[in-house]
Image 1 (cartoon, rainbow, N blue to C red):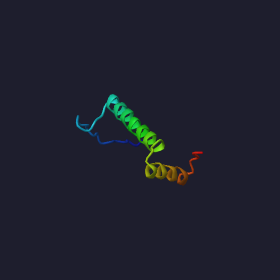
Image 2 (image 1 turned 90 degrees about the vertical axis):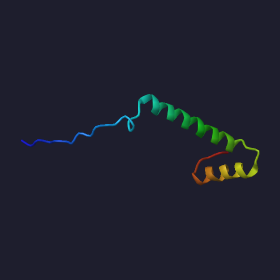
Image 3 (image 1 turned 90 degrees about the horizontal axis):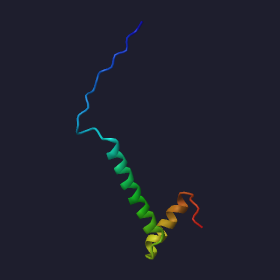
Amino acid sequence: MSIISSTGHSSTASSTTTLTQRLTAAVFASILGASLVYFAGFSHIEAVHNAAHDTRHSAAFPCH
């Protein structure tokens, strides 16, 4: 019979994240991403709109 042992790593308070912190970060990242997509998609600045349009086509994402 073999015994499998593992070394216990103690987690410090500075390196652990709670579920609430992870969800908060995910929500803020989603809001930021949606804002960037909205800005680029509906921008009246031609260079920004064209860059987003070309990026969508290069990723094989249909946009029209």
